[in-house]
Every structure is written in structure tokens, then in C-alpha cells.
Amino acid sequence: MGKIFKFFVPPKQWRLPVTILLGVFFGLATYTVYVSKAWVYLSDDPAACVNCHIMAPQYATWQHSAHREQATCNDCHVPHDSALRKYYFKAMDGLRHATMFTLRMEPQVIKIHEAGAGVVQENCQRCHDHLTETNKNLQVSYQEAEHGKGKLCWDCHREVPHGRVNSLSSTPNARVPLPSSVVPEWLRKIKK
Image 1 (cartoon, rainbow, N blue to C red):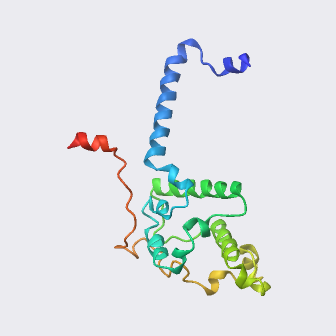
Image 2: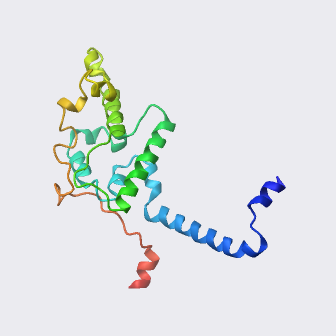
Image 3: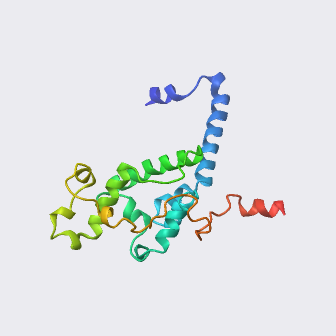
């Protein structure tokens, strides 16, 4: 145990610079978690999806759909067969979204990726299985439908729940929750 601990302790002349670098790294990591409000992504609150602004059209169209009464974003866009798969999928999808938004790579027209489409198909069937249980043609996976073995739910129900709107400029005046300021209240009081 002592040998392992000694392996990670830097030589005496490097202790101060390593401590400073670790402090800077920890501070930047803490600031990133605070600014991105990372903790809200663990919840099922749809307002978390508009933290980055780019989901405003999807939020606004969902808010005016019948699905609003029964389902949140996570009910349709996150796997529900196990907690491990759910949070792994959320982490991977969230990191991809955060990277694209940070690097300003978001597309003008947002389209669902293959992994997300598979999850949405699973969740359509999970919630509406009472409607599809008598017809095997309606119980196909995304991969089966891609190979011509049936149709996806949204092949017929194309406008559910987001309508035809999917570009960033399609709902310029949509009322969506605005992100709160990242400046702490005490700092705003000092500025006044």
C-alpha cells in the first residue's frame, strides 16, 4: 500500500507545481459543472433539455402536443430497460450534445441519430404496447425496420410529438424556459 502511495507522490521539487496544477484542474472542473448545470441532467425535467438553447423548437412543439400530459423528453429519448443503460446513454448523448454546442457544431436542422432512433422506437412500443400487441408488424425494432421487416412508428405518425418543426429558426418566438444567470447573486449585488 505504501509503495502505491509513494508512486503517485511527486518528487519534492515537483510538489508545489503539481499541487498548483491539480488545484487549477479541480477549479476548472468545478466551474464547468457549475456553469453547465450538470446536476439537472440527472433529472427528468424537460427544462434541462433547453439549457443549451438549441432544443427550443423541440421543447416548444412538445409543450403544445398531447404527449406533454404523459411523457417527458426522457420518457421517449432515453432507454428504460435498465438504470445502467439509461444513465450510460444519457452520459454519452449529453457529452455529444455538450461538445457540439461548445464547439458551435450544432446543425441548423436537428435530426435524430441512429442510436436515438432505436431508443425512441423502443419507447413508442413500451408505452403503446396495448395498441400493437395484436399486430406483429407493428412490433419491429429500429434495426428490423431498417432492413425492410416492418415500419417504424413515426413512418405513419410523422408529426408526433414535435410536428414538422425541426430547425433552429422555425420557432424564433417560442416561449421556453430561459437559462438562469450563471453569475451568483452575491456577485450581481457587488456589481450594482
